[in-house]
Amino acid sequence: MSQPPALFDTHAHLHDPWIGDDLPDVMARASEAGVERIVTIGCSLDDSRNALAVAERYDNVWATLGVHPHDAKDWDDETEAEFTRMADNPNVVAIGEIGLDFYRNLSPHADQYRAFEAQLTLADTLNLPVVIHSRDAHEETYEILKSWAASPSPSAVRRGEMSRRDRGGLPIGVIHCFSGDADLAHRYHDLGFLISFAGPVTYPKNHALREAAASLPLEAIVIETDAPYLSPQPQRGKRNEPANVRFTAEQIAEVLGESLEDVAAHSTANGLRLFRI
Image 1: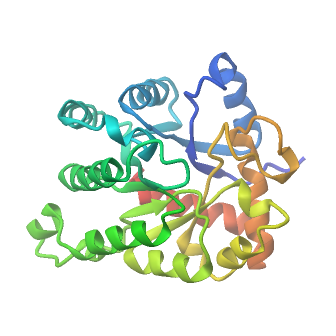
Image 2 (image 1 turned 180 degrees about the vertical axis):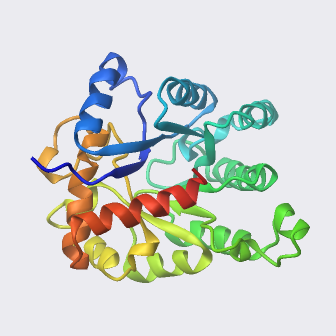
């Protein structure tokens, strides 16, 4: 039997209670499926601590630090100070997931904007890319990121560059579990973001999402599971896990007319550039 192509799950929640004590088995299945690297995502201060603990446990796992828009009302100076301290750990590769969620509105919009903009500033200070969450807030999120991307970061100023888009071709962040159309995907990519596709791209009714993926060059795409959520079509109704990122890779290969091996190689290379791994 041939070896599966090497894959990179760029967004999972390995420390989620739904995975819990099953984590060693989940990691074993990921390895068997060819998933060689995983980023586990922080969504609050405590959640970010748990993400970092998992990253310190596994050599092929990295962590992010962030306060999700659901928890934006909890953003404060103490959290910022703790994230700044934690970011000294080499296993930390990004700030996120951060952004806006006007679907559930679990935090007031004012708090979501406040936490989002503060964490973009923190990413500047720490010279880290960002992982963006946007649900039912496409244009609001885009306008914030458009302004942020066009303004000079502290590190860019030190290098004599004009904006984040001048960072030697490195992505400035990723749009997690992209759910917009082709036009929005290209607008984000023009700002310097990668576009991440998850299980929903495999759902039969998501034609517009597949059209968005098909319109992009491979250099713009990364793949993820958002495990333990958003299981791809063959696993819908079950707990998701990184091994299932292969289904998303296969769907992207189909819509682009590329081989699975090429999608795996490019999406992995893109993820490595994004997170500076």
